[in-house]
Length: 464
Image: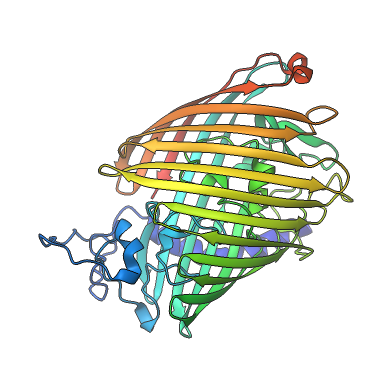
């Protein structure tokens, strides 16, 4: 079992991060108050009551106007003389902007994760696990119960005038089996190395991310960073669907996944980025081949593909990006086929009332294939959370597919769902939700699919 042995050795690299995250995920706060960190007393996970607020809070500095959407007026002195520990490991901005890999979301996105300090290290933990019963209708549908989700640990500390960052993210997806779960109109990857997965969503790998980064300021508001992962996520597309505030409540993957964000688990990626305030330009070299059907191992890195992404957060509520990628041999079953992909997206996030949220993502992706026609995909998804109990979410998609049947077929899908969360302990919620999906199919596919209606019922454990 050479691959499994290698996986065990490499898994040891993420143990320190997950152990630190485990400390952060504990329901009880640390015994020792964090006196050296004034201003953090009221932050979730710090274990201290919120200080009394003055009748007129001080105005934030002009160059930090975006900060007032979260943690306004909270002075965050740095440990060791670097940037304050609520800053991103990638630059001089608050970490709420960071999403999957090195992608950006709006600054107004709520912070999710339990934080604590361990010496000079700031550590954070987060978990989201869904137990799902899936029923896909019609002749090409199916039924299955499965577990999906993620457990993430992150650590960062000042180093050499910059910031060192570490991340580890694991998933229970492999336990659902190599064929994944039924999902009408979904395509991509393989369960056995011989046949493509069609009308099924593949499981994600056990190791979703094992990465390290280092950033260093090179001028006022200007930072340079390098990020590497085995696996990691290159600079392409919007944040991965399970990390977007507009999509993380849905238990199903988008059918546009392989146009927009399927590169979020890449076995070998190096990204260099330049951050200038609300702008970021980054380029990646990465392994183009998507993960194979062996979901527990670490695959060999080959930096044979490239991508470039430009990101801009013009206001605290908006995050915009445009990206391009040349991907060598992404599909295991078609090793001679390369893809050029482009994507553009806009994410809008707005706070609603006391603890509420409205988040929406509009994204377009297109891929040109060396043997075959160009194919496009469009996604619009939104989540509305009036308070910390209820969330209503929806997703509409249009995709040009060439794997469902011979030829190119435009297909559409609309999903609507809701989840009710219950707080069971500090930082821990359980929720119960339901999702219903309908489809728009061309005449050529109606005989094969019928008029399907699909649904999912799910229970969720969330630690934040």
